[in-house]
Amino acid sequence: MTINSQAFRGTALTDFILPDSVAEIADGNFYSAFWNCHKQLRVAYKKKTYYAEYKGNWLSERMYDMPQAFYSAVNRK
Image: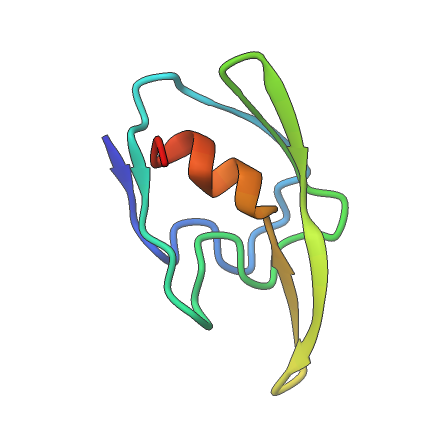
């Protein structure tokens, strides 16, 4: 299963578990899957927990992104 590059954009999610069946998250430069999410976002995936990182503001939207280790784990890189 693939998660689209804007799947969680602007949501109020704070915690969720990503199913092990997810094999890819499309990650655009500006519009990553977690753009403008809640700053306390925490994602569990395959028994590991990842926390959103603050990347600044752009056009008054908060930029939060998951660490590269998360994308690498999901995309198996």
